[in-house]
Length: 121
Image 1 (cartoon, rainbow, N blue to C red):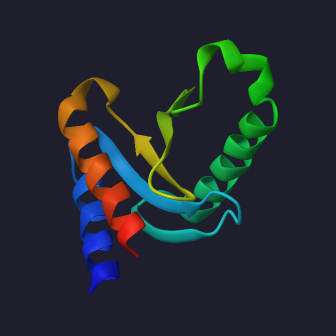
Image 2: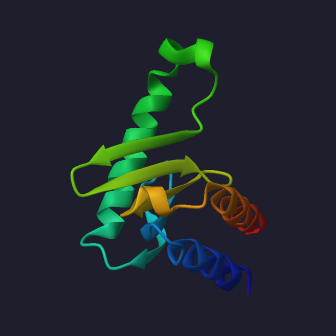
């Protein structure tokens, strides 16, 4: 039941304007828990993003004046990736196709809902 509610929350996030796909990834193992969207190798993208996140944790001391890392945005020629902590030990990776279309206030609410459901597992 709790896992189904988590999947529903990720599916809701992936259905928002500007969002092409989402994948929830274990930050340490790099394993995708749930992915939604028609992006080639979405689970692989999520796993690679966890590598990127762990690299940033290792060099965190260089950025200590800025505080803890909260979100990373990677801009590519054909889309953007938003990588963010989302509950204990998990990352939410969103593939964006229309960044300007994203309602960031709704994003924060849905992100918090996913994090809460991760923590309830």
